[in-house]
Image 1 (cartoon, rainbow, N blue to C red):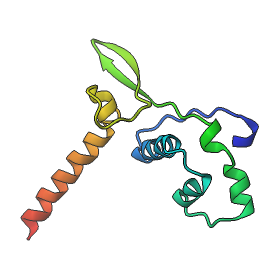
Image 2: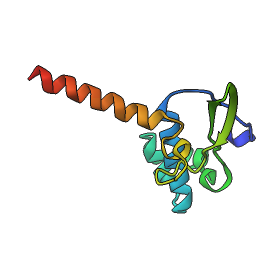
Image 3: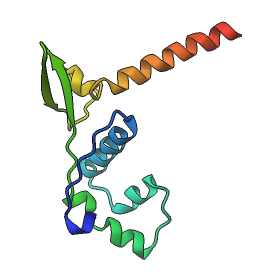
Length: 116
């Protein structure tokens, strides 16, 4: 699909997609080769893998949007930078997913501490 130029829209609450988008953006900014992208997917270097990922970091783009309910209306925010240092909490918390993950970890840590 990638080599055909298809656009893909995925709707999810999974942080895995956001982590991939964050890594993808970072690799693009660093102007790395496609071998790092292959490594991300645990793919051994080969001609087929190289062909699959050829120029993907240079030519493809991932946009990330957050749908937020405000005043009985849905607001759509572009959080594509996925900048954890952003002043906009929607961007910094990746649409609330990273803060939820942190909260879940904190709660499990409390429970585990009580079990000891």
